[in-house]
Length: 372
Image 1 (tube, one colour):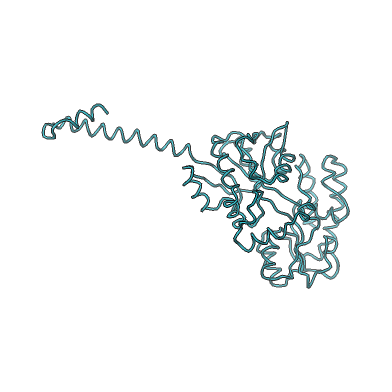
Image 2: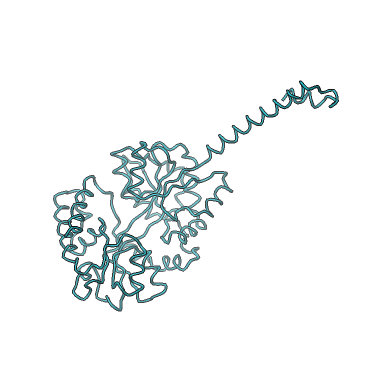
């Protein structure tokens, strides 16, 4: 800078070629240094988010950057993929992840892919106290919280009351009147719903593998015997929504979001507790994330009621943010707020953490159902 000041004081006509070259090199050198500094700053202020589709709407990402200067780099994923990605890197590569509450403590203990949250950095008053407690309980280890809740919802039976008004659980789906008219998913959740329909409590048996094996064996038989009623084993939302809209299906096992969508155009569509199985998607810190500060800012930002309402409308799921549902603008958002009364919420069976080995046991049964 001293050289630039000297040149500024001199008469332009007195500047020789050598001086001009020096000035040019000095300016370009300064620009290069400043450019490198700005580049490093931008890189340092990027939040790498591993999340589900529709959980980080582009408009909110823009708003967040305008408020904080931090960009959000989104990688779409699901529970299994999150574990796989973070396990491959030892918990590196991302600053914030959004696993379901039952998929945190097991992988954290076994693979060391998550680290505890510093709750003093989170405005927990913005989060529903009951859901926060549920997340702490399900995703707590050694007295430390590994997750806070973000979005939640349930799994049940979506029923056309005109053709399947008698259906209250999986066993009812399997009655003769619904042959070729139901859809199921070959997933662990379907086994659990069938177990509850049989009068068992699979969650209470999580700590006893022998007992759990008997429960899911029984549930597997229920589903295998029900195959004549199965139109198809569904693999995506379009299949079941289109099947119910066309009248091809009487009932299917699905998410509350399916019900909210279908009920808007057909009030005969009902959502049956089988019982309702509750999921909570959370915020968790990857073990080797490098921008915790940005992660905490994002958590607090999206839990503001006005922002959380945008996410309810985007993801068609209930938010853990206090006051968010009242601000939702979409028909689905308003339906969510109306449906989930305190009584309904109290009846939900929340998924507890999955002990190691259970999914392998369940997988064998599901494979055998497919093969029969």
